[in-house]
Image 1: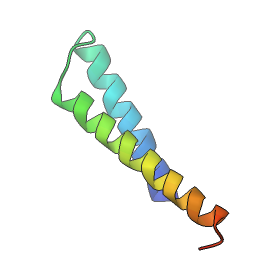
Image 2 (image 1 turned 90 degrees about the horizontal axis):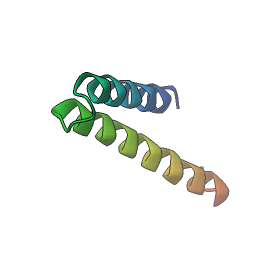
Image 3 (image 1 turned 90 degrees about the vertical axis):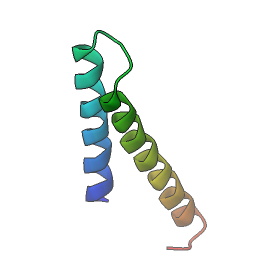
Length: 56
């Protein structure tokens, strides 16, 4: 859980720093930040569904 939260925060920070630094343009940091965010949120969603289904 802690690793997922840290990954989510890291992804958002990388995204924000790149977004502000490039004036809103597209960059490698923006893609990396989105990847970290999306993967973290998907993992949390799957974990939540597993808890709901009493699989964990």
